[in-house]
Image (cartoon, rainbow, N blue to C red; front, side):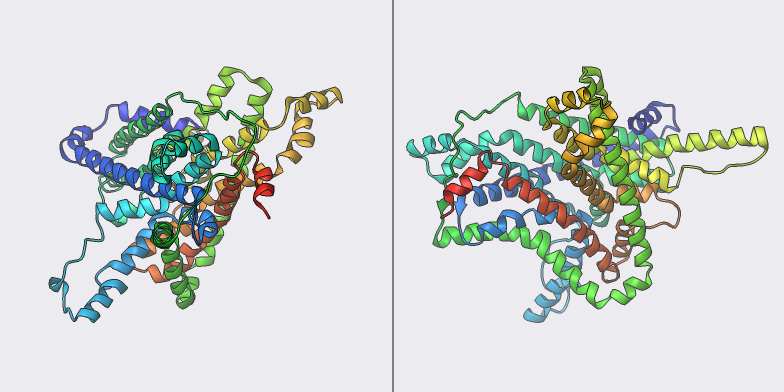
Length: 536
């Protein structure tokens, strides 16, 4: 799993055709400025929307609160590039919004009125904020649910109202969770390619593709990828610093329902608007537009080999999910059996790929696979005078390897958490009955981990369905998935024909979102007792 990163850094440090000086003098600082601006904008946006809506649905009562509780996670199912295509389709000059404005006010041309530029850095920030705020919402809501009622009640006795209690008590206590959520959102931001490419935003990821494919320089792409890795390491360091070694513990074993501030009138209307707006723009709008297009243009979509692309996506995602679960179980169970620091360190390093942008991993995979194929081909020619060609490069095997390197952390983390909930006494009892570790895993742990195995496979499956940068680079020649199919058609202004594919990707992500919502809702200790207490 570390081979891609090692190969990227090795190529970046190796002597090259002096393209680094050219990049440094021309585009490097522009990539840095744009990427930093993108990260700052998205970071502020997801923090405000995610933590604000999490506080509202957790601590306040207003009409629709129960619906928003889980519905605010739905934009997580929408890939950012899909929302970018939909918003551009609706807001561009020939789109529904500007066409309606011209018809309503009698304007004849673009010179008669002002409208913000759609394909811009600001639009990229808005789009990514709308689909990534659920990371912060998810973790902030869990943090608010787990907070002690005591500190909130004390703040009220000191004269603080709901909003002052939020800013001075609840928000600081939830800071570690919010920082983690923002970090995850920013990692997805630096990984994104479809959105920044569609909006013509010169971020690092777009620059890597440009240097590699247009300038035909793998060395330059590797050097830019190494700089991007520094951004990722800085994010990880910021997340660790944000936690600051702080620990929060419950000081009572008695749990009661959290206080609910009942909102009425204008306050209730504003709360509904604050929750409905990001949901409407991040999920309802793209789902409605894509659904309408999918119904009207399904024949054109089916004639464009849609079923083949869907089959490719399902096959790749299924193979990758099963492989990731198998590796995750192997690693997590190895840690459980040994418990040594060295094994724990190695497994954590092996699962670091989730923090690395797909474009960086793709470069790191192409290089070693190409070296392997060339070595085997040269050996075969020497010994048997038979060329072998490309055995791994540009194949499904290489693509699955890329998915595994990127998403193994999801599987390993889920397996580690699940095994941690099983008491070691189970292992001891199985060993006394004559079962070896393998038999214990098969007959004792697997039945207890069934739900976690399914969850891990589902998470990896959905992420593989959505992954675009890695797939664009590593896919076999003339081989498309739903993600690449949607990206190519929408980039050619053919969103209508790709709508069914985009809607399929969104639909695949809804089930994990619902599972996450149920998990968070049950995260408060004593939840069953609380439910019995508040029910009539």
